[in-house]
Length: 423
Image (cartoon, rainbow, N blue to C red):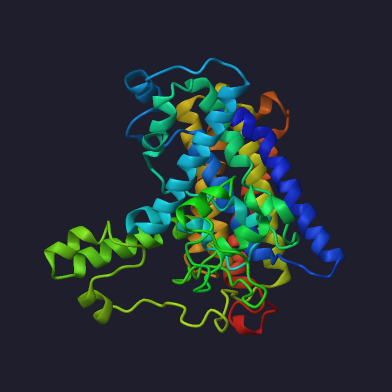
C-alpha cells in the first residue's frame, strides 16, 4: 500500500493539472464543460477513493497469487510478450467486471458514483467508488492465472491500466478515425455515460474497443442523438459519500418492504434497476422519463460558497498528499485517523454545498476534534518535522472551517432566501 500511496503522490497532481487545463481550455474557446460545484464534487469523490484504496480497506475474497499458485497450467517467461498478454488479460477482466456492474443490482452500487455526474468531463473520470468493499476482481483474472502470468506483472500493470482510462472523459475531442476500431475513444465513452435509450449500457470496454464488438455491446455515437449524462435515478446531491451508498440503501429498503420472500432474495441479483412490483407501486422513486427534458441538480450557490468549496477541496487535497508523503511514518492507526478527518471534511463541505442544515454540525465537530488533537499533540501527524509552523497552519484551517460552516449556514445573505442566490 505504501508503494501505491507513493504513486498517487505523483499521479494526483498530474490528473488535477489536466482537469485545470480542460477548464481553462473551455474558458478560452467559450465552450465550458465544467461547473464549479459538479467539478468539486467529482474531485472530492476521487479523494475519498484514493484514501480508501491507499488504506487497503476492503475484504479480499480471493487473491491473484492464490489463483496463480493453484491454477497455472503453464508459465510465460518475463519477456515483452508476457506484458502484452497480461495487459490484454487485465482489459478482458475489466470489460466483464464493468459489464457485471451494469447488469446486476448489487454490483451497480459500486459503479453508480462514476456515472452520477450530469456533466461529462475529465473531472468525472475521478468519480470512483468507495463502496467496492468486496474485492472479487481476481476471479475475473482466472485466464491470466491459467496462463501463469506473474503476479508482479499484474501488480505493475493494474494501476497503469486504471490511469489509462482517464483521458477519454472529455467532450473536446471528436471521433478519431481508424482508432475507433481499436481503442476506447472519447466518442465511444460519451455513449457509455449517456442515459439516452439508444446508449444505455453500451461501450463497456476500458482500453480496447474490440471486446464490445465481439460481445455485442458496441454503439457508435450518433449525430442526431446527442448524449445526455447522469443516471436515470438522479443523485440530487454533491456529497460523494452519500452517492456511493444511495443505491444499496434503496435495495435494502425494497428488500425489507416487499412481502415476497422470493423478491427479498432475488432483488440483489436481478438486472440493474429491477424492483419488486408491490414496492414499486407503493414506494415510487424519482426516475428520469425524458432525457432531453429534466432539471439538472444545481442548488443555488453564491460566489463565496463556490470559492469556499474550492478552498476546502484544495485544503483536503493538500492534507491527503501529506498523508501519502509521510505514509510510513504516520503508521496504520494514524493513517486511519488521518483518513477519517479527510472523509469527515469531504462529507461536511459537500453537504454544505447541498445547503444541508446538518452540515454545520459536521464542520464544527470535525474542527473541534482537529483543534483538540493539535492542542494535545502539538503536531499534526508529524507535519512539524517537515514544516516548522505546520501545526499552526492546520489550526488556522480548522478555524476557517469552523467559522465557514457557521457563516454559510446562518449568516450568509441569501441563506434564508436561497432561490435569490446566483446559480
